Image (cartoon, rainbow, N blue to C red; front, side):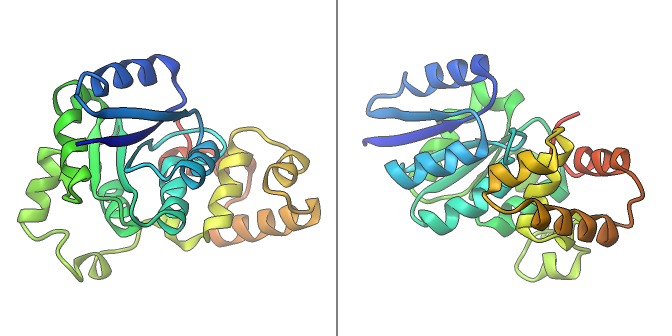
Length: 217
């Protein structure tokens, strides 16, 4: 079965390692690579791959936000989230976004072939721990609504993008240029973000971004 795969991770060595694993499988082709979330979205728009592998923590736009865009741009493309964090909250966000796969990077060498194989047939794939959570009913329909929403969900998608860029050290002007909006709009968003999150300083904003996996420490 021919499967076209887009691989998005900001570390060259990780992309090379995963690509080598994937291309041992007959008929599988890594049709493109991306080093940040925005590039992953653009490549998906252009190439419409069967499966996208997205690192959760990437610069400019993290994997979760990139996945939201990809689901809208290419609904038939399946998404496998790659992460270093085995987190229930993160798993809930992955499911809410509509990604069918969640794989720890530490398990990639053993399970990535099985994960992509499952997704290529539009079947879900999760780490053992997350699968157990699903079986125990933690993530059954309606359960996520009863659980408290992740703290980052109080922000809009655009606000989350701005938090990431600011926390990565971008100036208001650089954020405006990246998002193709005015500096004044960035300033307004920034003020709203600080108010919504009840933050008093930029360092608190950075800590928030790290705590909620918007950027890596």
